[in-house]
Length: 310
Image: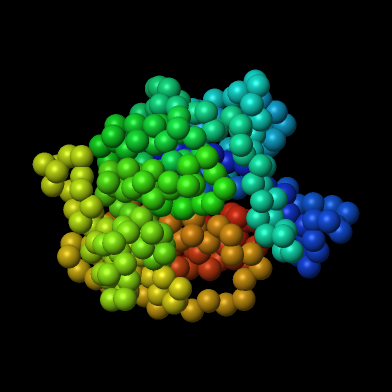
């Protein structure tokens, strides 16, 4: 089977209180799974794409639950390794305290390039890795670079900058190594500003398009491949794309959100699905915006994801 997309990253068990309650007061918690790459894989699988998620999980009930949930969504987990010593990570979502991660020393924090053994990355139409993988440990950072260097299809990167992780104190440097290898970059405006440093600082005042042009000019390890970089920039009120030298922008109209977490991953899935399906940039923007908005209507990172692009 040829994969439409292969993704690498960590997924955690996510615990949340019912709507209107806090974890401290709730007498029952909602159990889900959460991870930037696997969230995107679920979205793509619901839209009919053939996707595989590569990672490490603990050999524990939390890991069992994640595998069962992803398999039920149609995500291929053939290359998920189980660790008998290190646990699966945990995420707590609380309306009062915000989001808290318990992932230090997790099984995924030590996954290196060896997790890619046997993975058909060269044959996949696209691969995906986010900056979270760059920041959870030295071994995952190396694995992310190896995936991007091996791929011959579309190399997709979302910077997904995070605080409180192993590499967060030098996150711009670590994540930029992924950006340098990307063909399709899906980023928040603030993330690009931080990663590009001085280049982005001057561009920010000129808007999303200028940031995109700075990102599109990042160096490549294989300049002779002749592949143009497509850059998507998510802003507070608009999302824009620089592709083939042309800038397109879509204004956002956001309704009430039950939970905004996962909206960026859902946007990515809608955008990627449209582009891999031969859709235009404008169509991909609309699809991404629709999928992102749909996910915010549910407490789950993926529960609200639609099964069609229209």
